[in-house]
Length: 390
Image (cartoon, rainbow, N blue to C red; front, side, top):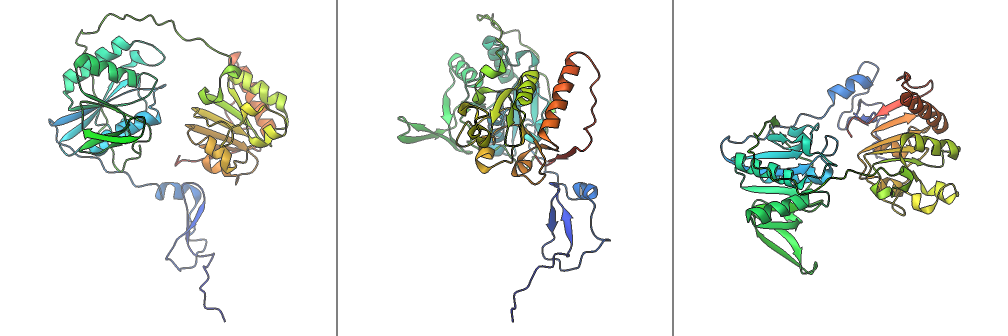
């Protein structure tokens, strides 16, 4: 006779924000129709608790974080630099964010107490002298004890080095460790590790800290009047050249649509890619079947991508493929299987046939280009599921 206690499958449960049923642990009451929660009510009643606001004394010292935005958003590297400042800031320190461009992100949720925007300096405009003048103006206005920036190749790392050279400030680059007392980086070609007290300018490598914070900042939007110290622009911005999406390497593509085993009409898929101006990717199965060349394969054994938008048609989502899209900002999945692994990663899932969806999207894009009205309701038989926690 067994004495192992079995879990009653009818005991109370909740519907999590992900839409999955979660058994209430530690509660042995039998569930019935009266205590079962609806999906809509559960989404609100079991939403994450609001984070506390970080409290600091006004008039104390400040830390200045500087980063370019991309279409109103900070990339993950810039978010990490801002989080580093928020984490090490004490009760007498405010965190000021200088955004070169616009910011539509929630600055408070990212850890900023004050935000200064410079929309005219948004990418892809190349104006390093004007950006340097904006940084000097912020330094004059807030007198920060330290300046933190992401050490990247898209303008922030260059700007930090330019400022340090012009202002005669000490600087630490490629910082991979930071706390309230010191910063650390690799030296001698990675054979040794060096630490030092905080310099005036700190350029952080990716993944130095996590961008997830247990608190929020004040998020106050402020303006800094121009000092008139802007240097004459010594550089001519010749603009950007538009390349055909098919010529862009997947690692550099910002918009990718990818085909899997569920896509049978390859011609329709390629037509949609041309209509959207998106780069083409594929799962390993689609490549092995000969539908796409090996350089189009996305995944751990193919290309790792970091597109702003990644649409997966008929891809179930093997772990290798999910590893290849882990850095994508917005993932949209189109699949007939609502329980496919990629649906758990996707920010938005369309439970629909890939061929039907591709045809409808192509027609919608063509209608939009011709100025015709585009229906916004999903086609019959299409279900939408949004990951609200993503």
